[in-house]
Image (cartoon, rainbow, N blue to C red; front, side):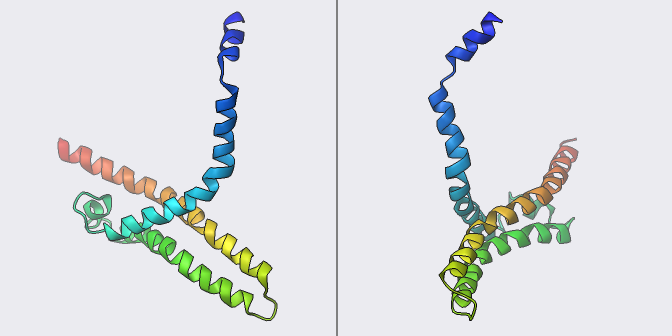
Length: 137
């Protein structure tokens, strides 16, 4: 019991609190931009020889296309969202509140699309690892 209390006293509560605040407040606002940039990189490097998309595209073309389509949707999320926000603000029931609401949804949309892509991509990575293991034998 004494070792537990000693370990408990050695904890840096300030660093822990800062990390919690970073994860809960800062990360949700910086992560969508990071995801958007990664989607742009994935789209521009789609033809690279060492990518998992290129390695599995011959065997699973439909599945690879389905995974890749999420990068395209993430790329299109911001331009389409901005256009929809402007159109919504100029509509009969629109206004500044609707404009800001659509922009808020648009900003966080890459988070949701990336989550779906990553859940589907898990099985693609498993297939790639199985292919690499099979080729080493």
